[in-house]
Image (cartoon, rainbow, N blue to C red; front, side):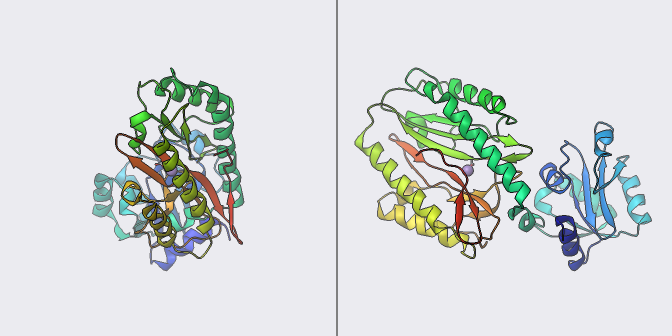
Length: 343
Ligand code: GLY
Ligand code: MN
């Protein structure tokens, strides 16, 4: 059964006629159609994509969707009445409040938070190959500019060179604003890349990823430039050990919280517990952050086909931070690490 049929079965089991979404990432996931505006409907009565004049001609090439020109709310209501669709499933976490209100005025809504997440979390072969290509392009790109990562280069210069390389190797730019965090800036987990010049003795975190046919990569490497302090090396070694352990812990059937907590405990025992201030990892796909989440609060279970990052980090104010991140596919028997840049 294809993904649209599976989704349509869930719509029916929840008592709805359609799942309706206005979200660009969900639209792309469902239809492979990228646009800034569109309404996607999936259900037993068919699959529809409603979009405006800017996109309508291109949308008409879609095979699995009937394409309709957006004319307004009243026309949408008439159309749905015409096919006897009354109950719409919505994911309130993916709707603007105004859109929710417009829908609520006209339709019978069934709220289902994270409705599509369970489908998106399990990648099919095509999605895995697109993510793998996005990883390979990011890795080739980093290797091609590594000679610039040296004293005198600014963070932003390095970021620009990396973005250029993404395009050069076939990627579609940045998957998210690349983080180049040097020296003390590395102690800020999501530093906004700035004008600081890299210096001898710096720790430099580079968190980067590109997009290939709509799918992303997300990798982090940390570099120790020249003569670094013994403390920096100690942090590096602890994070590297934690990261390897994190990858070993991944297995279909395991709870995401359990994996996160195991690595948290490991870094606590090294004395770095309070400095590991984010979750261990997250799914990637059409978006940089999607299900499942490797966090201590997660209730998700790892499944074959998940692609998750493993990215422990330790950030010590005034000293610096280290984060190491790989993209991992959960397989039937274990884990395949898609990214394989040297650490
Ligand atoms: N690489 C950015 C993030 O994981 O948030
Ligand atoms: Mn990440």
